[in-house]
Image 1 (cartoon, rainbow, N blue to C red):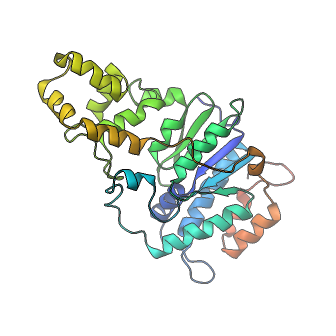
Image 2: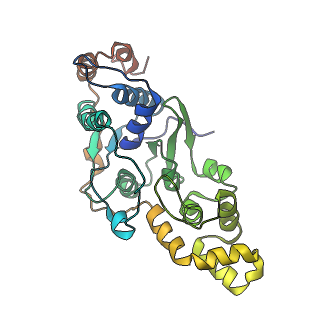
Length: 300
Protein backbone atom coordinates (compact mmCIF):
# COMPACT_ATOMS: atom_id res chain seq x y z
CA UNK A 1 0.00 0.00 0.00
CA UNK A 2 1.42 3.38 -0.98
CA UNK A 3 1.62 6.13 1.57
CA UNK A 4 -0.58 9.11 0.76
CA UNK A 5 1.25 11.60 2.95
CA UNK A 6 4.84 11.74 1.63
CA UNK A 7 4.19 13.47 -1.69
CA UNK A 8 5.54 17.03 -1.55
CA UNK A 9 4.81 17.97 -5.17
CA UNK A 10 1.41 17.57 -6.83
CA UNK A 11 1.15 17.85 -10.61
CA UNK A 12 -2.39 18.10 -12.00
CA UNK A 13 -3.15 17.03 -15.56
CA UNK A 14 -5.75 19.78 -15.72
CA UNK A 15 -7.47 19.12 -19.05
CA UNK A 16 -7.83 15.45 -18.21
CA UNK A 17 -9.36 16.16 -14.80
CA UNK A 18 -11.68 18.86 -16.17
CA UNK A 19 -12.89 16.63 -19.01
CA UNK A 20 -13.53 13.81 -16.57
CA UNK A 21 -15.50 16.12 -14.28
CA UNK A 22 -17.51 17.56 -17.18
CA UNK A 23 -18.71 14.14 -18.34
CA UNK A 24 -19.19 12.73 -14.83
CA UNK A 25 -21.51 15.40 -13.46
CA UNK A 26 -24.91 16.63 -14.65
CA UNK A 27 -25.26 20.20 -15.93
CA UNK A 28 -24.88 22.75 -13.16
CA UNK A 29 -25.41 26.49 -13.48
CA UNK A 30 -23.56 29.26 -11.68
CA UNK A 31 -25.04 32.50 -10.38
CA UNK A 32 -25.04 34.04 -13.86
CA UNK A 33 -26.50 30.98 -15.56
CA UNK A 34 -23.16 29.77 -16.92
CA UNK A 35 -22.33 26.05 -16.87
CA UNK A 36 -20.02 25.16 -13.97
CA UNK A 37 -20.28 21.37 -13.60
CA UNK A 38 -16.69 20.80 -14.79
CA UNK A 39 -15.40 23.45 -12.40
CA UNK A 40 -17.34 21.94 -9.50
CA UNK A 41 -16.10 18.42 -10.24
CA UNK A 42 -12.51 19.63 -10.66
CA UNK A 43 -12.66 21.33 -7.29
CA UNK A 44 -14.00 18.14 -5.71
CA UNK A 45 -10.89 16.38 -7.01
CA UNK A 46 -8.67 19.29 -5.93
CA UNK A 47 -9.85 19.25 -2.33
CA UNK A 48 -9.60 15.47 -2.20
CA UNK A 49 -5.99 15.79 -3.38
CA UNK A 50 -5.26 18.33 -0.64
CA UNK A 51 -6.75 16.00 1.94
CA UNK A 52 -4.67 13.05 0.73
CA UNK A 53 -1.29 14.65 0.13
CA UNK A 54 -0.89 18.02 1.90
CA UNK A 55 1.51 19.24 -0.83
CA UNK A 56 4.12 21.96 -0.45
CA UNK A 57 4.24 22.53 -4.22
CA UNK A 58 1.49 22.35 -6.84
CA UNK A 59 1.35 22.68 -10.62
CA UNK A 60 -1.68 22.55 -12.92
CA UNK A 61 -0.62 21.73 -16.48
CA UNK A 62 -2.92 22.60 -19.38
CA UNK A 63 -3.16 21.75 -23.06
CA UNK A 64 -3.30 24.71 -25.42
CA UNK A 65 -5.58 24.88 -28.46
CA UNK A 66 -3.94 23.99 -31.75
CA UNK A 67 -1.61 21.33 -33.07
CA UNK A 68 1.38 19.85 -31.29
CA UNK A 69 4.63 18.26 -32.44
CA UNK A 70 2.74 14.95 -32.58
CA UNK A 71 0.53 16.29 -35.37
CA UNK A 72 3.69 17.15 -37.31
CA UNK A 73 4.86 13.58 -36.79
CA UNK A 74 1.51 11.98 -37.69
CA UNK A 75 -1.17 14.22 -39.20
CA UNK A 76 -3.98 11.86 -38.19
CA UNK A 77 -3.12 12.11 -34.49
CA UNK A 78 -6.37 12.60 -32.52
CA UNK A 79 -8.11 13.23 -35.84
CA UNK A 80 -11.29 11.41 -34.80
CA UNK A 81 -11.89 13.43 -31.65
CA UNK A 82 -14.93 15.71 -31.87
CA UNK A 83 -14.57 19.39 -31.10
CA UNK A 84 -15.28 19.95 -27.37
CA UNK A 85 -18.52 21.76 -26.46
CA UNK A 86 -18.21 25.52 -26.05
CA UNK A 87 -19.30 25.43 -22.40
CA UNK A 88 -16.51 22.95 -21.65
CA UNK A 89 -13.93 25.18 -23.35
CA UNK A 90 -15.12 28.14 -21.29
CA UNK A 91 -14.80 26.14 -18.09
CA UNK A 92 -11.28 25.01 -19.01
CA UNK A 93 -10.22 28.64 -19.40
CA UNK A 94 -11.94 29.58 -16.16
CA UNK A 95 -10.13 26.80 -14.30
CA UNK A 96 -6.81 28.49 -15.10
CA UNK A 97 -8.04 31.49 -13.11
CA UNK A 98 -9.41 29.22 -10.39
CA UNK A 99 -6.13 27.37 -9.91
CA UNK A 100 -4.24 30.65 -9.82
CA UNK A 101 -6.62 31.99 -7.17
CA UNK A 102 -6.07 28.84 -5.11
CA UNK A 103 -2.30 29.31 -5.12
CA UNK A 104 -1.47 26.73 -7.81
CA UNK A 105 1.13 27.43 -10.51
CA UNK A 106 -0.44 27.14 -13.99
CA UNK A 107 1.84 25.90 -16.77
CA UNK A 108 1.41 25.22 -20.48
CA UNK A 109 3.58 25.28 -23.58
CA UNK A 110 2.58 25.83 -27.20
CA UNK A 111 3.18 22.77 -29.34
CA UNK A 112 3.08 20.35 -26.42
CA UNK A 113 0.44 18.61 -24.33
CA UNK A 114 -0.14 18.88 -20.61
CA UNK A 115 1.40 15.47 -19.94
CA UNK A 116 4.59 16.59 -21.71
CA UNK A 117 4.72 19.59 -19.39
CA UNK A 118 4.19 17.25 -16.42
CA UNK A 119 6.84 14.82 -17.66
CA UNK A 120 9.32 17.66 -17.97
CA UNK A 121 8.53 19.04 -14.51
CA UNK A 122 9.00 15.51 -13.12
CA UNK A 123 12.48 15.45 -14.65
CA UNK A 124 13.29 18.80 -13.00
CA UNK A 125 12.13 17.92 -9.49
CA UNK A 126 14.94 16.89 -7.14
CA UNK A 127 14.83 13.11 -6.84
CA UNK A 128 14.77 13.26 -3.06
CA UNK A 129 11.29 14.79 -3.25
CA UNK A 130 8.17 12.67 -3.67
CA UNK A 131 5.67 13.73 -6.35
CA UNK A 132 2.21 12.64 -7.43
CA UNK A 133 0.55 13.15 -10.82
CA UNK A 134 -3.23 13.62 -10.75
CA UNK A 135 -4.94 12.57 -13.99
CA UNK A 136 -7.78 10.71 -15.61
CA UNK A 137 -5.48 9.55 -18.43
CA UNK A 138 -3.74 6.19 -18.06
CA UNK A 139 -0.94 7.38 -20.34
CA UNK A 140 0.69 9.13 -17.38
CA UNK A 141 1.30 5.75 -15.70
CA UNK A 142 4.51 5.64 -17.74
CA UNK A 143 5.85 8.37 -15.41
CA UNK A 144 5.54 6.27 -12.25
CA UNK A 145 8.80 5.40 -10.53
CA UNK A 146 10.25 5.23 -7.04
CA UNK A 147 9.68 8.95 -6.40
CA UNK A 148 6.64 9.61 -8.61
CA UNK A 149 3.19 8.08 -8.14
CA UNK A 150 -0.01 8.57 -10.12
CA UNK A 151 -3.38 9.42 -8.55
CA UNK A 152 -5.59 8.06 -11.31
CA UNK A 153 -9.27 8.91 -11.77
CA UNK A 154 -10.74 5.65 -13.02
CA UNK A 155 -14.49 6.37 -13.13
CA UNK A 156 -16.05 9.78 -12.65
CA UNK A 157 -14.37 11.94 -10.03
CA UNK A 158 -14.72 9.69 -6.98
CA UNK A 159 -13.15 6.36 -7.97
CA UNK A 160 -9.44 7.15 -7.65
CA UNK A 161 -6.48 4.81 -7.19
CA UNK A 162 -2.85 5.50 -6.37
CA UNK A 163 -0.23 3.81 -8.56
CA UNK A 164 3.48 3.53 -7.93
CA UNK A 165 5.99 1.48 -9.85
CA UNK A 166 4.95 -1.82 -8.30
CA UNK A 167 1.22 -1.19 -8.73
CA UNK A 168 1.81 -0.56 -12.45
CA UNK A 169 3.81 -3.78 -12.77
CA UNK A 170 1.03 -5.68 -11.04
CA UNK A 171 -1.59 -4.24 -13.39
CA UNK A 172 0.39 -5.02 -16.56
CA UNK A 173 1.68 -8.51 -15.90
CA UNK A 174 5.08 -7.47 -14.63
CA UNK A 175 5.75 -4.81 -17.28
CA UNK A 176 7.31 -1.73 -15.62
CA UNK A 177 6.02 1.83 -16.23
CA UNK A 178 8.80 2.81 -18.64
CA UNK A 179 7.74 0.04 -21.05
CA UNK A 180 4.04 0.96 -21.21
CA UNK A 181 4.78 3.02 -24.33
CA UNK A 182 5.96 -0.21 -25.99
CA UNK A 183 2.62 -1.83 -25.24
CA UNK A 184 0.79 1.12 -26.77
CA UNK A 185 3.13 1.13 -29.77
CA UNK A 186 1.98 -2.39 -30.55
CA UNK A 187 -1.71 -2.22 -29.72
CA UNK A 188 -2.33 1.42 -30.65
CA UNK A 189 -4.87 3.72 -29.05
CA UNK A 190 -8.25 4.43 -30.63
CA UNK A 191 -8.92 7.51 -28.48
CA UNK A 192 -5.73 9.26 -29.66
CA UNK A 193 -5.81 7.63 -33.10
CA UNK A 194 -2.40 6.04 -32.57
CA UNK A 195 -2.32 3.24 -35.17
CA UNK A 196 -0.28 0.40 -33.64
CA UNK A 197 -0.62 -3.00 -35.35
CA UNK A 198 -4.01 -4.01 -36.65
CA UNK A 199 -5.06 -7.24 -34.96
CA UNK A 200 -2.75 -6.87 -31.95
CA UNK A 201 -4.67 -6.23 -28.74
CA UNK A 202 -3.51 -5.43 -25.25
CA UNK A 203 -3.09 -9.06 -24.17
CA UNK A 204 -0.77 -9.83 -27.08
CA UNK A 205 1.12 -6.54 -26.69
CA UNK A 206 1.67 -7.14 -22.96
CA UNK A 207 2.86 -10.68 -23.69
CA UNK A 208 5.36 -9.50 -26.31
CA UNK A 209 6.81 -6.78 -24.10
CA UNK A 210 6.88 -9.09 -21.09
CA UNK A 211 8.69 -11.83 -23.06
CA UNK A 212 11.10 -9.74 -25.14
CA UNK A 213 11.26 -6.20 -23.73
CA UNK A 214 10.93 -2.95 -25.64
CA UNK A 215 9.73 -2.99 -29.25
CA UNK A 216 13.33 -2.67 -30.44
CA UNK A 217 14.07 -5.92 -28.60
CA UNK A 218 10.85 -7.53 -29.86
CA UNK A 219 11.93 -6.97 -33.47
CA UNK A 220 15.53 -7.98 -32.83
CA UNK A 221 14.40 -11.25 -31.24
CA UNK A 222 11.86 -12.29 -33.85
CA UNK A 223 14.14 -11.38 -36.75
CA UNK A 224 16.78 -13.71 -35.34
CA UNK A 225 14.24 -16.46 -34.71
CA UNK A 226 10.78 -16.05 -36.32
CA UNK A 227 9.62 -19.29 -34.69
CA UNK A 228 9.44 -17.48 -31.32
CA UNK A 229 5.94 -16.28 -32.29
CA UNK A 230 3.19 -17.48 -34.60
CA UNK A 231 3.64 -16.93 -38.32
CA UNK A 232 0.53 -14.74 -38.50
CA UNK A 233 1.76 -12.48 -35.70
CA UNK A 234 5.22 -12.36 -37.29
CA UNK A 235 3.67 -11.17 -40.56
CA UNK A 236 1.62 -8.49 -38.80
CA UNK A 237 4.61 -7.16 -36.90
CA UNK A 238 7.01 -7.13 -39.84
CA UNK A 239 4.51 -5.44 -42.18
CA UNK A 240 3.81 -2.71 -39.62
CA UNK A 241 7.32 -2.12 -38.24
CA UNK A 242 7.49 1.55 -39.28
CA UNK A 243 4.03 2.19 -37.87
CA UNK A 244 5.01 0.66 -34.54
CA UNK A 245 7.95 3.02 -34.10
CA UNK A 246 5.88 6.05 -35.08
CA UNK A 247 3.25 4.91 -32.57
CA UNK A 248 5.88 4.62 -29.86
CA UNK A 249 7.04 8.18 -30.49
CA UNK A 250 3.44 9.42 -30.35
CA UNK A 251 2.81 7.58 -27.07
CA UNK A 252 5.97 8.72 -25.31
CA UNK A 253 5.59 11.63 -22.88
CA UNK A 254 8.29 14.24 -23.45
CA UNK A 255 10.66 14.98 -20.60
CA UNK A 256 12.52 17.88 -22.22
CA UNK A 257 9.93 20.55 -23.05
CA UNK A 258 11.65 23.97 -23.07
CA UNK A 259 10.06 25.31 -19.89
CA UNK A 260 11.13 28.10 -17.59
CA UNK A 261 10.50 26.28 -14.34
CA UNK A 262 12.00 26.30 -10.88
CA UNK A 263 10.42 24.37 -8.05
CA UNK A 264 10.28 27.46 -5.83
CA UNK A 265 7.85 29.02 -8.32
CA UNK A 266 5.39 26.22 -7.60
CA UNK A 267 5.22 26.78 -3.84
CA UNK A 268 1.58 26.17 -2.89
CA UNK A 269 0.13 29.33 -1.33
CA UNK A 270 -3.40 28.42 -0.30
CA UNK A 271 -5.50 31.27 1.07
CA UNK A 272 -8.65 30.43 3.02
CA UNK A 273 -10.10 33.88 2.35
CA UNK A 274 -9.54 33.67 -1.40
CA UNK A 275 -10.97 30.15 -1.48
CA UNK A 276 -14.14 31.19 0.33
CA UNK A 277 -14.57 34.15 -2.00
CA UNK A 278 -14.06 31.94 -5.04
CA UNK A 279 -16.54 29.31 -3.91
CA UNK A 280 -19.13 31.94 -3.05
CA UNK A 281 -18.67 33.42 -6.52
CA UNK A 282 -19.68 30.07 -8.02
CA UNK A 283 -22.32 29.42 -5.36
CA UNK A 284 -20.47 26.25 -4.30
CA UNK A 285 -21.55 26.44 -0.69
CA UNK A 286 -21.18 22.71 -0.14
CA UNK A 287 -17.46 22.96 -0.91
CA UNK A 288 -16.59 25.69 1.57
CA UNK A 289 -16.03 23.15 4.37
CA UNK A 290 -13.74 21.01 2.21
CA UNK A 291 -10.51 23.00 2.40
CA UNK A 292 -7.83 23.36 5.08
CA UNK A 293 -8.89 25.30 8.17
CA UNK A 294 -6.39 27.51 9.92
CA UNK A 295 -7.31 26.00 13.25
CA UNK A 296 -6.51 22.40 12.33
CA UNK A 297 -4.61 22.54 9.07
CA UNK A 298 -6.74 19.59 7.92
CA UNK A 299 -9.59 19.13 5.52
CA UNK A 300 -13.05 18.65 6.94
